[in-house]
Image 1 (cartoon, helix red, strand yellow):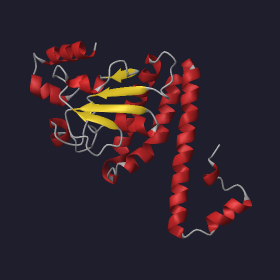
Image 2 (cartoon, one colour):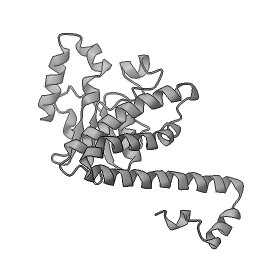
Image 3 (spheres, helix red, strand yellow):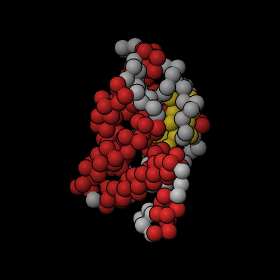
Image 4 (tube, one colour):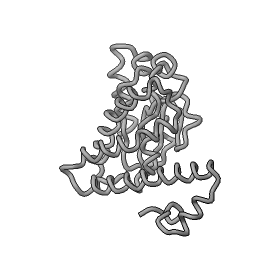
Length: 220
């Protein structure tokens, strides 16, 4: 059900809307569209919670639903948008699915999620050298934030303009996760850290597994 301020089904509401200047109409329509997407995503999360066999399908539907507005919000250039959209849908729906599977009640709402090695917009090897198609930005944290999930993004790179809670720290340092209160997190996703070109660049070949083992010790 749409909130009352976006419900134009009554004559009075339609008349008020029609009386608005063109720019204000566009703003209202845009806000109503975003609210409709949020409500649909909420419905799909509820279905994903209760229907195990359909959980992966609903996770994919949520990713597809949210992606156009997510790319628009972060001003993705038109020439890379289509390719990036397909890449992100594939990545984010699988991450969303595994998060839902990992939680005992299969429900992200009201939970706190930590995204380790979330990606950044600058200050790292991948952000500066490999990010022409913007795939190394913190898309999972952005996606969860758009869904209304409390997410904390952690990366060694720049996160200054991100709208969710975030910290720029070196995860290989022993006390790097002291910024997170103990027993305050419901789930941690770490796959992006393990695949980080920045980690491979610094630890090189024989030391890459050593870095993985170190982060496991810090976390667990």
